[in-house]
Structures are given as structure tokens and as C-alpha cells.
Image (cartoon, rainbow, N blue to C red; front, side):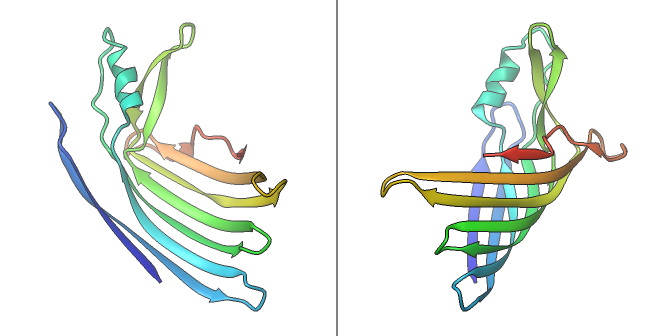
Length: 169
């Protein structure tokens, strides 16, 4: 079992200061005879708005600018890794409070701002395959299917999230 702990303390000018412990536990359930690792992970996440998100908000000085709260959430994975043949596949579930999302205000000149959603959740399956092309070059293909849902406010019903259902790396 691997256990990790990270402490973050953010002192925000003219905003709400935040302190958070982010925990992550990895439980490798078993390694089968072929060397494949079957695993289960659980973790907590915390992320302050990025400088890009803050800059994009500042650039819209004529629009009322909300203060974005940090994203907080939990994630769970169950999967299998094959370190010999370099592939993995897993099922995941994630939920977040205050997820930061872009809101388009004027689509003609691409103006908008970042806002917090009240709640966000996503579940799905993802996998990755790596094929060496040379000793120093590899081709890596990843694929994800997910069902994402969000709530603008806590009282809203769940609706389809603005993320793609199928994505490739």
C-alpha cells in the first residue's frame, strides 16, 4: 500500500485563504502470475484557480467578475496495469465541489469568464497502450469514455456536463 499526504496553504490577496490536506492511498490488490497489477486507488484533490483562469477574468474588466473558489473533490479507480506489454485499463469515479468552468458571454468575440459549478461528477473507463517505435521513441495512445454531470447550484437537477463523452490522448 502506498500512502501520500500533501498540505497546501494559499494566502489570497483580497480573497478567501485556503488550507487543505490532500490524501491519496493506492492499494495494489494482487499481482498475477503474468506480472499484471490489479489495483484500487482512492484520493482527495484540491486545486486553486490557475493564473490563466485569473488572468482571463481580469481581462474582462467591464463584466462583473466572480471570485473563483478552489476545486475540491475525491476520485476512485479500479484497474489493471501490464508493465511488460505497457498497457493499462481502469474504471473511475470522480466528484468535485466548486469545479471551475468557462462560461461564454459573447460567442462572436469569444468573451467569457470562469465560474464555479456547485457540483460535478464523472464516471467512466479509460485505457492506455504504449508501443516502442525505437529505443528512444514510443507511440502512446489513450482513450477515455466518460459520463459527466454537473449542477450550477446545489438545488439544480443533474445535467450533462460540458466535457466530451469520448476523448483520445
